[in-house]
Image 1 (cartoon, helix red, strand yellow):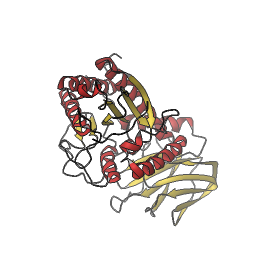
Image 2 (cartoon, one colour; image 1 turned 135 degrees about the vertical axis):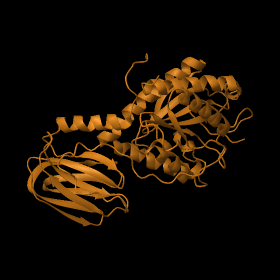
Image 3 (cartoon, rainbow, N blue to C red; image 1 turned 180 degrees about the vertical axis):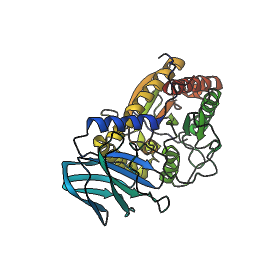
Length: 398
């Protein structure tokens, strides 16, 4: 037996929630509120990432890429501005006078630049495209270009264990990713009553069934007792990257907790630094445990700190918190379990998705009362119904 130590609205008739819509809305809002500054608008496209800087007037622009720095020299000065970014292929930007510098992520060394005149109610714009793959090199933007929307990125090929909807799925149907944690070579927690991999999968399959009944498509990271990779970090990365496109509305990872015999209750997480007073980070165990889990959690904790200055990342976390609160409330109401609340922690699997992402701990399989409950189909059904209803509410879906 392996144990993981732990420490302690009504429906509206609005259209289904789309992550691309709220990102686009955010970008438009930022454009109107920050027209006088040099902060970029951001776009993720197939094969490249785009930064768009408003200009006071059309001007010249010359690009030079040296190592991991793309430097653009302008014919006109811009207000000074700088910041970190979590855009694919890009780490940071800095504007000083006539110079715009973009720090590229490792492995990215190509970029293109163009200047668009004012058109369609938009000011003149400096456009910097950072290539993220050798294919789909962007053409020069047209003068009628709108504020760039978040579009699908190139995702890593999914393993055979992953179930994807058919490519002919209607565009107006919401799409979610459900991640039953662990599986295959990693069973997760185990007690005399339950194995984590079994509970996670049983509940996730029930949630999928209920969502499909209400017109929601679902990608499962696994639908059988399988792992995606023997390497835990690669396994987590493959799961999370199924939710890095603008077509996915949410990513939900489902887990079962473990600790001493007195620990019990349900808790729901979204990505962030471990909360003060919760003891050793819960994420250490879900990130692989041992020294590898410790190292990955330290990296993710540092990443959480770095996200504080990224506006788009903060928007994602805000929606993730709302989803986590809805799920937690529904689960407690449906089960009568002890509520351990909504928390933040540095889980790798919910760091990478570019859409609202949460991780649910359904309860403690090591608790003498809660453990046997988690093995009961009727209890699993109640939990699945609560999670599905929270997701439907979040999506404004009937």
